[in-house]
Length: 246
Image (cartoon, rainbow, N blue to C red; front, side):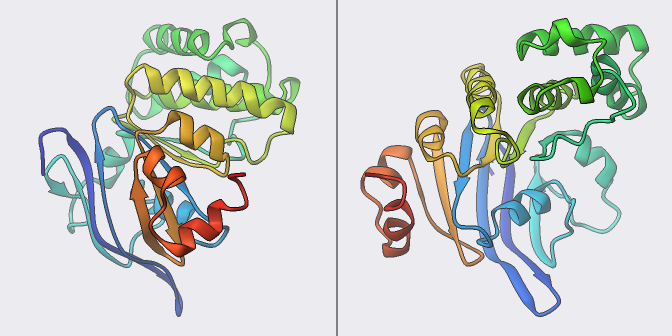
């Protein structure tokens, strides 16, 4: 594993009953890299993301984090999870807490930061995503795009090694998609390591260092945006992209 590789996934499989959702996945995630994962519904994209951060426990295989297999018996999974930020399609904010408390709670309970430090970090990240003026607002007072930007600030405030996005715009009204994609694009330029499951093809093409096309539980093809979008090698990649690339 190179010194710049944060995560290396090897022979990863995930089955639900008799349904094999992930089949022999190999993937390296390098520091500072932005990876987009595309593919049809049911291709395994979200399951792969949820397996990386162990919301789903893989059936077999290895996840090597900084040289250690986190699936080894006795490994501190809770500590591993603190190194991965997750942004969900449905925001997952606490409706009874205001914006500031939503962004500080994880820092205080998981990272054991004191309240003053947590609030300072929260405000810095809320400023980064354009939400600092809403610190006293409750989630039900915000638009979907605003909620997602708060969720991104919350994930950033945990200082993750890798930020995972699971279809971050799929629950948004079309007019709010742009503001969230711009936020993610700005973060990509700042050197953060990100893995983004998305159905926004133009965004994946423009923001990514590497694009992965998943089909039927496997990585069918991967490459730079230029390679994948302009010269796909696999017939199934071409068939999928035909719907988006005119």
